[in-house]
Amino acid sequence: MKSKLLPLILVLTFLIIFVIFFKSLKSSNIYTPNTTLEKKIPSFDLKSFENNSIIISEKIFKDNEYYFMNIWASWCIPCKEEHKFLMELKKGGKIKLIGLNYKDNFKNASNFLKDLGNPYNIIVSDNDGTGSIEWGAYGVPESFLVYQNKIIKRFIGPISNEDLLEIQKIIK
Amino acid sequence: MKFIYIFLIISVILNFNFLKADEIKTENKIAKNLRCLICQGQSVYDSDSEFAISLKLMIKNKIQQGMSEQQIYSFLKMKYGEWILYDPVFNRNTYFLWLLPILIFLAGGAIIIKRFYNKK
Image (cartoon, rainbow over all chains, first blue to last red; front, side, top):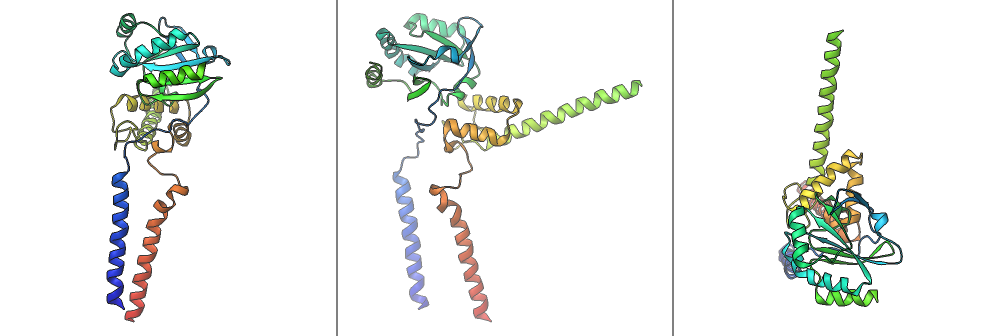
């Protein structure tokens, strides 16, 4: 009895371990953030980019308009890549672009905008990065499509041509 | 009189320092319990990424605003999801994780007791 039970238990244990390892080897271990977490936009008061006045979020976001909140920095290479799409988005005129300048220095950031164009209606600066934490952001670039004080879509990383088309479809 | 003044001033300074030390302690404790989301396998405390630096600063600000440790955890959970906390919450997905050690412990105990009585 005993001699029969032991091999069975051993085989079973190895089988369970094998299945667990086999499954977890195949699953991706790169964390993909849950993009539908918080819907309501956080309130913030951040310094304006151009001067030192404080900009309050309640004054920016109005109910019946679309906003594209974009976190960017001049030191961020992917931001350069997505910039042309932001300019394209601006051309449509149906959406207001809000830029959040993340941990940047004023001179580099203004040069960046001078070279590539300024798509933003309002720019706020987030020197210590706490403003973007309030938005639940991971880093730069990251964008939020806002309507009626709610985040309807979130883009982690640079936006692509497909993203642009999708946004244009939504705001039509 | 002068002596009392000096004594008072010194005690105030000392108390202030204690307060600060406490704050830094909780700050570090919270940062150690948070997973740095953009750097795999590191806590926010260990990491020097931009994300972790901002998060540490934000924890400091929140403590100064008078938020408790639990409030900060739930705030971050709301922003970033449960994954940011190192301590997994007890729910449907984690029953197995939490209960398995207890089950193994009970099974082991049962085996030991059985052997003990059999020998007798």
